[in-house]
Length: 474
Image (cartoon, rainbow, N blue to C red; front, side, top):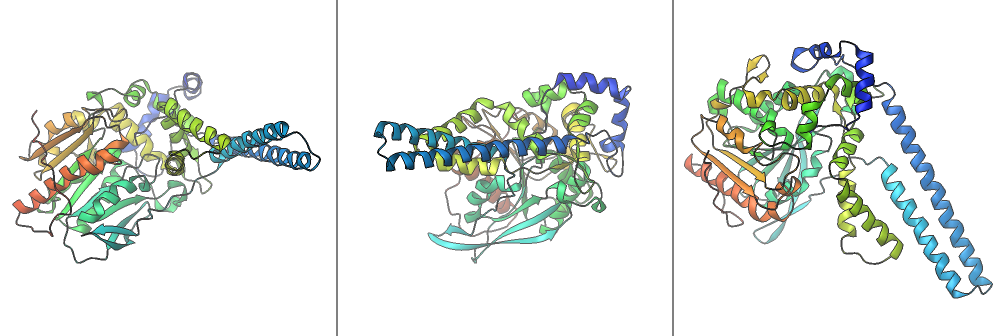
């Protein structure tokens, strides 16, 4: 859920030639500029994307027609007594054509925002209904509450979802695990392409403004859980609340696998940022949506995600292809198809948010260096006094181990710092899968209940046994 773009050196050279004094354009980006985005953009990007998508759709249609033609030939052959060996060969060719058509269709289609689909949860051994309700509607985000049909009193958890190309529904496993033991809320960010220009700009400071408003709405008993990219604006928001109104701080603040200190552990993302010529990237990869808003398209971000780990994605689609051809019962097919239906559903970011985040978080590393400002005022993580929980995955190749842990030294105002590194977990394994369900969630929830107890707050009995989490030792 980190922000990056494909590495195209040729684009860099041409962009520098076109832009001339391109570095001066940084003055119109992010914190240096107020108002609508006025930086460089590519007016042809969306057109090229649609052209390529339609071309693949045409190939898919032609392949499907080939499949149907092969089927007709096979049926005619059966009628006139064609040898069975030829019929079997024709059937195999038919399956190959069908597999090609299906995969091309999957790659070319536009995937809508998936539903959370969490209509029930298990509490005390019984299935309990869950209703998804919007409790605050903002131009760029809806605050969603998963209301459970139960009388239990459980901790309030606000999940601050990353805004890095995927919808908040990517955190469905996170929500699902917390539902039996927490009152769960989540920030459901809206595709920037669908937000009218009249709604104004949305940058890193605006993101933090939203988090502040959501925390204020839910109250000081809220436990904030920030994941990946959202950890940075969440630190900005919690620090500002702690400085201006300490009594309104959250009960606990959890940061998971985030680029709080990108320089602490290099990854492909940070290496790209270190050599990035930002105006060139904006010129190449910022598009104009049909409504006139400048956006960083989700399809560009998706290609970036895939380029970071192409072998795994190729292997998964090879498994799908082999399954379609063999028509067998591959045990992982349903899982792979569900994953990519979610993974390929991407949302655009506002151009100003993308430029702001790349510049301030990844290039300048302002939060780690102590120079980050929020609405013109310095961000002071040392003002936060509530318990802080930090989680990392030992095999995370997006926000590598150390990027979250090393930043804990900045939280000097809190006397209760906890840290856990999950062995064998990659980036997604921190908030989804067996490690999240069995190792990470019990530690986080246990610490949340411990913090509440220290403040005299009581909850219903825990559904599962908690696991102690170690105190952070610098």
